[in-house]
Length: 272
Image (cartoon, rainbow, N blue to C red; front, side, top):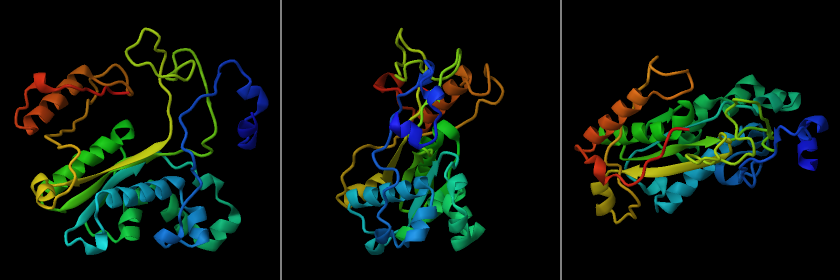
């Protein structure tokens, strides 16, 4: 209750029996090692937590891969995106005057999520911010893989982040809404009643397999193939996937993987 009051949720709202009080949260949305990334205090304050967390996760991913950008001879690209910004509206007038409207824009607009990482870590490959809603992270992986295959970079970071502020806030349930009545996701279960949107970030380091093996890298997975398309208007509603569209993109991915046999696939992640 105290957390909900602190972010301005009215008491009558969070005590409503239709208020969903469960959400997957990050432990520390506000925390940021500003000095490590060359930020002064004011810059860190005005920067969207999504940019800060995505930068931290990219840095951690490169560390885990054993790659120091300043000692790597190849080009490293960045492909990633985030949710629509909800932090900019909380910027104070004092902060706006201190860094200016352009400073607020650069530190908050989703266009700069990838470029922020490239600048902070001195990466010289393509820096492409991706926005395709639920598919952002996987589309980033697809584009990064294609860039490596095309010789545009030798290594790439790919992923996404989703943080809305204030983060400590639930949702109101309504009949036929997308939200799960009790906040729990039970996909393909008789007790399923909807979804729940949480916060997080994830990034993978991609590299040509032959180069990774030659360099003695730890290889966790191989992208055998990938494909993207769009359903157009052949679906029941704007936010619903098309069966035919899904079928076509899966077949295209199998073809890209060298006609991988469908019966060798052991895991499928569904839309939504």
